[in-house]
Length: 389
Figure 1 (cartoon, helix red, strand yellow):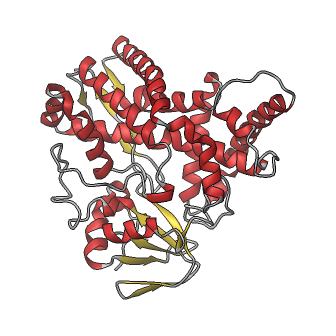
Figure 2 (cartoon, rainbow, N blue to C red):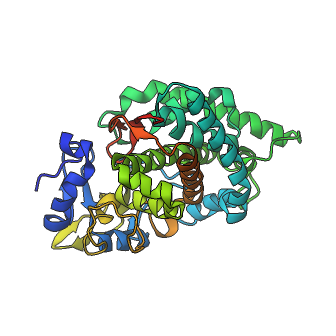
């Protein structure tokens, strides 16, 4: 089977290749990438792999290339320690407090849309600024740097999946220098006993390991980068994908306008149908044989969340966007030890956003399907033109 995630038809709609993977090649080897990688697509196989971290390890990163373990992109106990450092920022109590900020910002963004031209872009004017401003605020990124940070964030994910990441080296260097400057400045203030903001950057900059030493600069940088990039890229795509699917069928949008109790269902069905992260990678620690195919020890394995979310053995009529679907756990946020730390924030922002939009812009309509974002393993709109009425 010749499934190719970079093929134009699969880039335009990744679901095009899911049927082949699920029915004909549940363990697929793709050689046209360096390094080659295997893909798991069936729901049961994806679930098993995500739970078996001893065999399907994150030790060499969750991207398509082998990287050194840093921050949360690692196995326990390092992953457990790093995750615990920032976990308090994503608890139900923290989400209750964050809701106030998200609601205020959402209303301000819609104010700007209503005061602006009749035609606007749901990505540029709404879905991008909302999560990026929120996560940047949680991490102490100055508000005047938001556009610059968004550009660097896009570059980071583009480089992760590019066939030639060297083309992004200069931009990545600027981004790392920017983060490093903020991190070291905050760390110096902490060491000097100065008053510092109560935010995630302070938590990371002042974090100590078991011996009482400050965690390494590399781990602190990696953790900051993971939160900044993950906290805006995926939520932006969740919001744009959700609005795209609701608005492309006017009756579907109207059903949510008429019945706001469908908001949660719309979010979860969007996550299943169009997961912002199509899949992430693991690294095999031993030979694994599945469906008569052996994946050798030391291989990169693409855990295809999106295909698992379309598996007919797990979801009835999986290719239909159904607001009344019986709830089955989807894989959009992963599973197990590495379940997405920012899932509560993403759901909160999507919920507040959709409630506000159906209330204030009930006659909104699409002006076209827009454009997809670039990385092959991510899925969202980089443009989504709309009109207020």
